[in-house]
Length: 122
Image 1 (cartoon, rainbow, N blue to C red):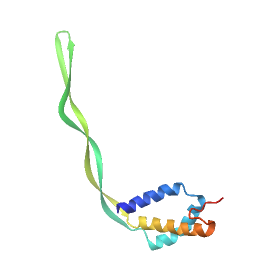
Image 2 (tube, rainbow, N blue to C red):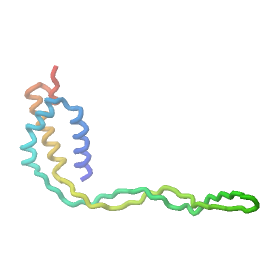
Image 3 (cartoon, one colour):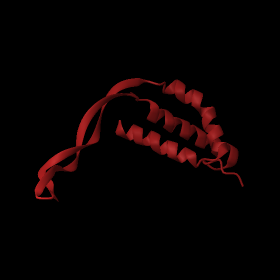
């Protein structure tokens, strides 16, 4: 599951640097890839963390003098703690293989059309 998500994210980052010709070839490959690997969403539990302020057990006190009256104000000293929690999200389990198929197909088209897998033109 993690490797599929990583593959999708890396593919997305790489596509940002792809040539327009590669993106075109990839879009030509999309229908077949979606036929082979249709969207299949399944509920998946994912662990996240959230930051919360928790008291350290120590206090910071300030005393002010007004005439002959002393006022002391104390505040708890807080620290940041990270608490894990679970969340149910819908994940497309075919996204990774589908992305890989589209990229592989596009690389093959590019090799045929441009002589290289990236569709780089001169």
